Structures are given as structure tokens and as C-alpha cells.
Length: 314
Image 1 (cartoon, rainbow, N blue to C red):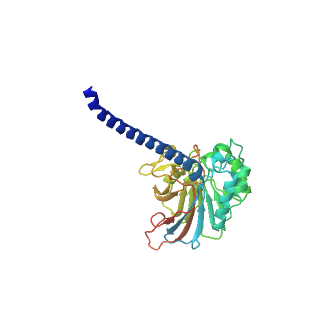
Image 2: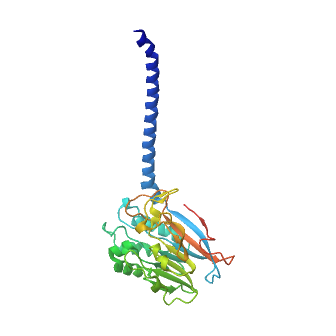
Image 3: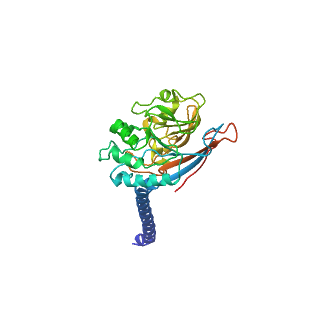
């Protein structure tokens, strides 16, 4: 009897300790559940629709083009009918109005205009009716992406061109009224990439605005003078600090899916794009469209990427 009485305070103390531990564990579990729920809401409902406008000054040695040429890049729209796919026709139209409000000199569209393969009923005509509203002093140019070719590349090309968007298939065209050339390279994933063909006929030492869907095409480019941009990666849509993208297409390095990247002989800006693909989630990788302002380099060694100053926007 005396032994039981002497153990009672010990048991009571142990029970109080267990109760505190269980309470702490329950609090931690509930906190974790709330954090996961908030993360899910942010990643699915908020960030995929929180479009950033980013701006960069791009110094080009011996720049002979128009002073302060403003070039907008808007890629990977993945336009769809349903809101769960993020980029509806109505949202795309709002982004077009935002871009037009900046009065760009040139607009480059590096492909993937349609969501999936158009299985939700989105048509080339609907896409062209929206993107055809883009306005730029020296024109709007596009190349097709893998989703465009998987759907119907020729039909999208026809619809976009009828709406006033110049679609380039591995070709170069002179920017009207300037000494600058626009170089459009086809999609690599679907076998339409021909960088050498795109550069054929380009004057020696020409200053260019080079754009492509898949950044891997830049590996075959010679050293260039001007701006080079690519798309396709979406920045992985989810970017983890210290790790990079959780997904990178076709073996592309997961730490090189967004921003200024050295590819072969060029500094290339890879944009995170505007829409989503595969999964409707973004985390720490906002959708974006980008305004580049080209200007003469102050120092001869200054080039795109090395001296570019950028700023994020809402």
C-alpha cells in the first residue's frame, strides 16, 4: 500500500507531462494542416494568376538600332476555355491590354499558345483573335511551340498571320525602318528547330532580336549581337531555394529554367511564361511577361545578361 502511495506523485507527474506532449503534438499537426492548406490555396489559386511585369535594360556593344528599343516577350500562354487551366481567353485579353499600355516597339511571342492539344475546344481562331490585339510600333512576331505543333501548327500559323502576327519558321526578317533583324527559331521538341536555317541570309555582324521556344536550340547558335530569349520551361512552375525547379523539360538543367542563362556562346533570357501546363500550380515562380530596353553599352565588354538591370513588377 505504501509503495502505491509513494508512486502516485510520479504517475501524476508523468501523466501531466504526457498531456502537455499530446497537446503540443496536436498543435503542431493542426499548424501543419493549416500551412499545407494555405500553401495549396496560394499555389493553385493565387500565384498562377499573379502576373509579374519584369523590366530589363540590355546594353549592346555598338548598338545601331533605335535608341531605347522596347521589346516585350510574352510566352507559354496555354490559352484554354476552363478557369481551372488558369489562362482563359478573358484573362489573356486582360494581359494583352496591359502589354499594349506600355506601348512596346516590338512584341515577341515564343510559342505554346494553346493549352494541352486543344482538347477542351479552344480554337486557333480564338487564340488569334486575342493575340491579334497586341500592338507594337515595329510589329508582333511569333514562333510555334510544341503544344502548337501537337495541336495543329499550320492552322495556328494561318490564324495568327491573318490576325496580323508574323509567324517565323526558322527565318530572319528585318525590323521595318531599322537595321535590326528578328530571328525566329522553330521548336526543337517536335523537330522543327533549324538555327542555321534561321540565320541564313543574315548580314554579317547584324544586330538581332533572336527568339525560340526551346532554349536548347541556343546551343547551336554562334555568338550574337543583340537580345536572345527562350521559353518552354515555365521556370519549372515550382522553384525550391537551393534546389531549383522540381521539374525541367527533357533533361534541361533544373537550375537553369528561368532568368539569364549562359547557353553555348550566348547569354539567353529564359522566361517563366504566362500559363501552366501538366499541373495548374506555381510556387516561387510567378508567371511573367518581360520588357527589355536595348541601348548602347557604356563599356565595350558589357553585354546582355552581364550588365542588364531588372526589376519585378505586379
